[in-house]
Length: 243
Image (cartoon, rainbow, N blue to C red; front, side):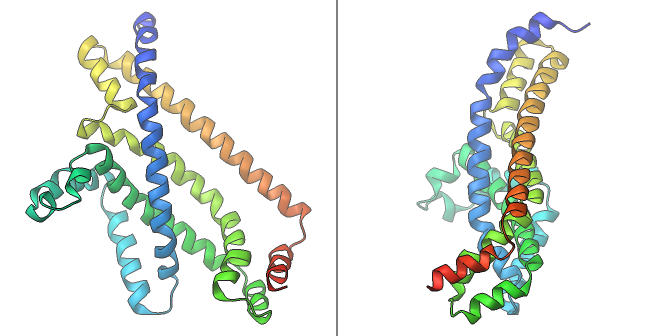
């Protein structure tokens, strides 16, 4: 039988780890997006010197388990003398930032693939029309390409956000007290793994379900706006920018 009193007592302590989980997820997604945008454009570039390294990065990162990437950054980098004597050592010796770097690099690979695919889905007509109006490449990207790509990429990026939240549980393997880390500590204190991990799983379920609901509402809202807004809006924005 489940000890519901034990689960109730452990719940407030487990909630304390949610803050660390949230910080990790937000920073990982930010780093992943910042790195993913240039990688995605390089992935779609015609030059082999751009798309070659981008393809290799995506292939290698996606082919290595996330846990190994965390270990390589946290344990592996500390083995290099050049790292230990560099200005980066205060960051790379901190497990919090090691997890962000490792999972941020991982998220960048998946996000870059999502963005590059969305960019390839954009019709050539509005882009060519923007160039015909005399807009620069940067103006075309800002006014036409990026708004269309965001709407195309959002459904797939929702999954990346949810997977990133769940991947933060790997932080507990390098001593961080996130939700999973606190759960492991509680298990060592109570010797009740079933109740503690079940409670932690319920908290993760509530977080991911709420996020999924919010993201789907955002997607639906964008879809409704697309129906209400003429399809030529990006081009109208380009015309306004040219004017």
